[in-house]
Image: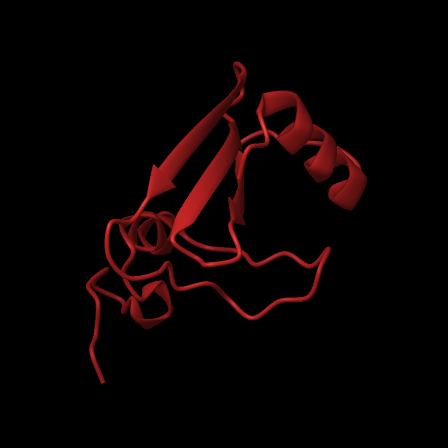
Length: 96
């Protein structure tokens, strides 16, 4: 997870062709407890990093180059380390 802004941007362009405005691109380390988020907010591009002290982020099972669409509530839950796949209609986590 040492990649900086230019490296992460190059990875997104290599995988998707361009950086789409108003989208977030998420990256994690092998252990799953560190995340970087690249966002094009329409005005510029920013990179944010997050590390969980305990546990892991709940990542979707996708293959390299595939994308997963998340609504804002699911993205917020993922960034907080919550099981975002279980976000219900009322934007709350439903534990099964």
